Length: 98
Image (cartoon, rainbow, N blue to C red; front, side, top):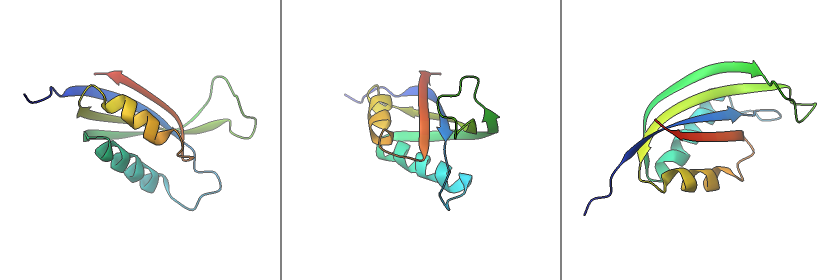
């Protein structure tokens, strides 16, 4: 039986402090991680740099927000979060059903 694919929308906060990679390269890296987690990217929207409402780190008061729509199995979001947990370029990850 073929597993059912579900649609998801993920919001990533990207941190490129001290890195030579551009935001586009970081977005490509996130898309690669989604593909490695058995997900299929359908659209990417760069929302630009925004200031945080609540600042947890005084050295980082704002960062670039990116929304990615993708489809995958039910375990894909958990696999993606685990893969991105150690990635220093992704500051925060929020995945929801679309």
